[in-house]
Image (cartoon, rainbow, N blue to C red; front, side, top):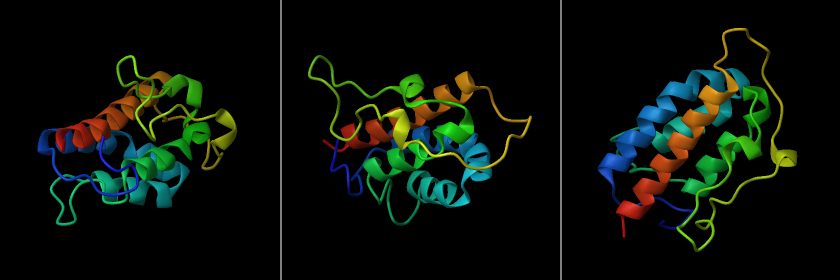
Length: 135
């Protein structure tokens, strides 16, 4: 992966995949925290003039983590992104549930926890693919 705190340099396929997964869950994230949703969108939106993940994938991951409780998922539901047998990629380690915050409301039209977890994992993998493609 590239610099976890800065923009990635390439990876159109990974960027498109990350955007597709992010777009699927942004309405639920927006209900929990409109600011987090806006920052995720700004970083994941495909084909922007600023380039992909301008704030760094660590920032995007943190925005997702900030709404886990509201989405009905936990850090242990998501886990981290492993780098083969070498441990976790820098900045993609599992979070702890104490860092998740609560917000939003309890709408009955939320996705299930499993669906949200799958989408979040897909977005994080897309972010990782963008970073890996730049090597």
